[in-house]
Length: 491
Image 1 (cartoon, one colour):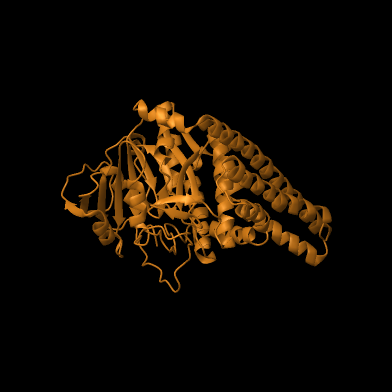
Image 2 (spheres, helix red, strand yellow):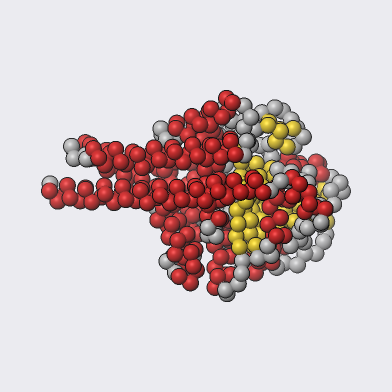
């Protein structure tokens, strides 16, 4: 028993050291992120954006929209893209083997006719079936192709893109009217910028008017409210902090802008991973670092993309399972960067951090809970460990959640109703009473499913975006909805 007590004590001390380290790093990046958001909100004004337009200081953008069975949202999404306030852009929608009415609904909504244009194939992808142009919108192109997965669809869209900046967005998303202008200004101000990530916000609970978000309200379901806070924490204190440190590894696949020539230079999107967004960013880092070329990868806190979040636990679990597997796949593909001084702060700080404190954090946290219970049952629980573990694993997380909620409400003033502000603060406490533990367990399981579920996405139940203003967008999964048939890269 003495040996058991020593092993137990060492394990407990290791767990506490792990969580103390991760919380110190969270605090550091929260501080960097808060500072970056504060500077951004103070310096960037509508007057500055107007000045960019008056000086013709902008770069045209190709919006790439991969779609698979998105009949519920595709028309509203494309319409929102076409209504963006930007001088010169095009929208390229690629239906990746859709089996629903996605294409026929776009044909009817945008007066599409078949187009026999020849496009140079700079990147290989699954064969195209036909392409369309719009009689009403000359900047809209729709391509129908054989199924190959999201990355394959993006590669097809890259071949059709004509402009120097490409913006990859999800087909169930909407962009804020000034999102492109706010994001592309970074490419104008600094020619070395190769990628910019915007902020993802949730459509759940929002009120829509004329294809735009007119008022932001908290959703009615707690599972959606928890995700509102998670997204705020991830983008305002996480990615903003890494961007300020010059070591950003993730740009969300739902809204990311890239220099087209840089993406083509590294071979486009990689189709054999569910983490194609992070993998592309890491490949860009490697390419420019290895050749010692100047470049920057940035995150901007204000260019906003609105997207639907899962409204049921089953769909949410599948999403988080996929995110965890995508993270591990990207890190493994680029494992040469781990603790490699050739890659500077990326190799010595960012990549080790994501391996130790992101990829393996669910394993450590689950083991911590297990040993907490086991120690209590066998009567060997150290009260000091239990108290410190709860403080570091739970209460400190609540504190960071309150910081993210404060940035969301006070600094950026997203929620006008006092009821929503109070609820958001309450959410920061309630999410740690079961919700966080359930998702931690799902990520723990996903860690050991990377090989077995390689390339599998899992079916996502979505209600879709209303075509017109119908009040609050309440996202709910359709009852008894069958899962789509498995397909390569997205089953």
